[in-house]
Length: 483
Image (cartoon, rainbow, N blue to C red; front, side, top):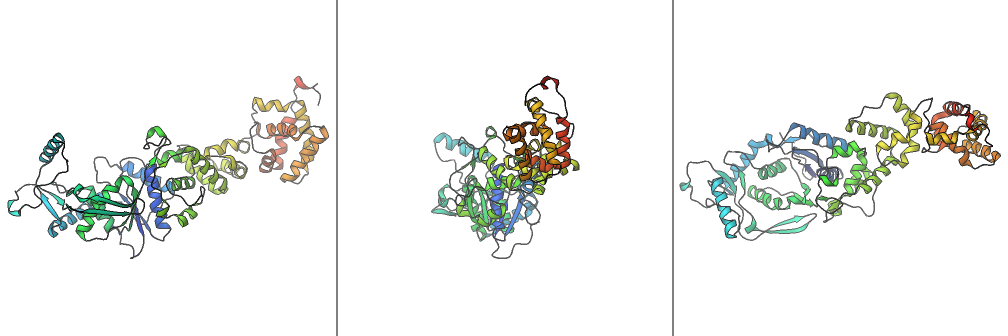
């Protein structure tokens, strides 16, 4: 069932995937372009599942597509439409064309058509089939199954004024009288697409340029029915970094793979928007900006290339801009996509205050948890061997001298750094000499955020407890070493 058409003048776009597999990254970009165009103009973005291939269409694939769109945040208006459910309506249109004389009955069998094509190939002739029944007298029609073919013009040209490809002309003698209703009464994909787009009130069709020739053929149905044709925009496909058509050898293809790898949805929206579309030199932008800026004239004619380094850069920029609450939600989505357990409430509570000091260096969401390890671990800390070296007698002595200075100090970064600097200067060493044992005491590692940022996150009580734990540890092997 198709919802009531949008009011006249409303922009209506659609995404029409075939549910035979995952949501391909190219399909996700097509959906995004349609979504951005509609949302930026107060229009409607519709979803149609083109499930007419009953042998290959699965509910699992449909669910994967819906979940992929949901993760990307591409919401659609109304209910998702099943193309297969409209078979009766599609057949009705085919018969209407037959009645109007813009289509005809073809009694040629598949065997006859194939025999013609084999002979044509052998003779080096065109294999474009010309049905002998196009202008046949109805009195000569046999009592046999027939297909319905649309009458294509034989002379002149068909023109497609494409918003991306420009003016495209197709010689009409290259167009076949395509079948719109098979001899078993089932509609073809080419018919179903046009009928559904018309009935759904679609005003703009944004899709891959592999459908460009389909536009010329589908235009036959629009004109045969006297329907307004939508604005067409055929976008170049996505290629791999080597310039070849995207395939498994280039890495992840399905949107769910990117979710599982830990890319935030808003970063994927940003990156996909830039795959073939541009707004000046802007590389990193919010979804709100993309909605405001997106237009068809910003789409290039050349294939875009998938570049994981650029994706990582865009992802890192978005992670750096996100609030702790948004980051926690994104982490939840990533862990769910990766099949990982959800974070416990205790872990979330410990992680949230640490995120602002670790997020600027993360490229993907999985980078955040190791970086925030200091906030997620509990005493007694497990100290890595390399970090343990900083906790020699000299390091522990510096920590012991620092402890009383921290007990009543204002707990802000400037004050904490000043106190540590004073202790280091009194000992005649650089700040790094006290930072290293402090890092080991607070995190048990050598690679951590700033020690003073960690102190702020941990708070006075936990910071002092961690320092005390290592500062009072005796190590007879270095007792006699000079400070």
